[in-house]
Image (tube, rainbow, N blue to C red; front, top):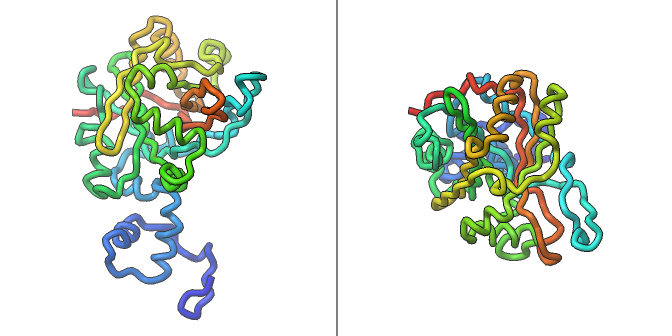
Length: 291
């Protein structure tokens, strides 16, 4: 690209420094190279997200590698007639952060309102510039009890289409966001994919899509710019057993998890992957104290 009569290779532009985009958002003076780099990074919010909080590398390593969205199978346009599933494409939301905390059980619910959570740190730094967030907070039984809270930001291109030209999956997301807890629980689906791990864990977890609320208690909390699902694994005896098994083998596990809003009518298909995350050898002993 040509900037001020100089040819600059895309590879020569230094990767975005979060403060530059922050400055751009505040309309402070930055040069043209910085402006272009900021605009490039506005396609994703992950760079800004990583400027909101710090965490030990051992925790960051758990989630920094992206899950393979194309590895998930979801309902196609004609699923109601032929039961054919299709390869998932780009999710509606992108993973921008993951917190792992331990605390007393009551403190782990509605974690988005806690000052240590990514939601509050992002709002503190970017205010209304924070995109719509989907928070999936999984409570793992054990000693201590651990919260793995993953934060997904609505992709820029999806946000732009939601009010102008939404597809079936985007319309379903709007219904999901505005719906009541009963509707959300009837549609909120999880797809597990064990990429690496012992045979016993793979057999116990399986790989079939599951409506989470059919097996586990799911509580919902909605804030100004976020929707949080709290998935309480301790609410089911079998799930507790499987989780205990996974915790014993955590350092050898690589798990991809996809989240989907289930389409049950032709007008709600094809489905789209809502969000996905890869857990790369998640050791719950690394969880940070919340209080």
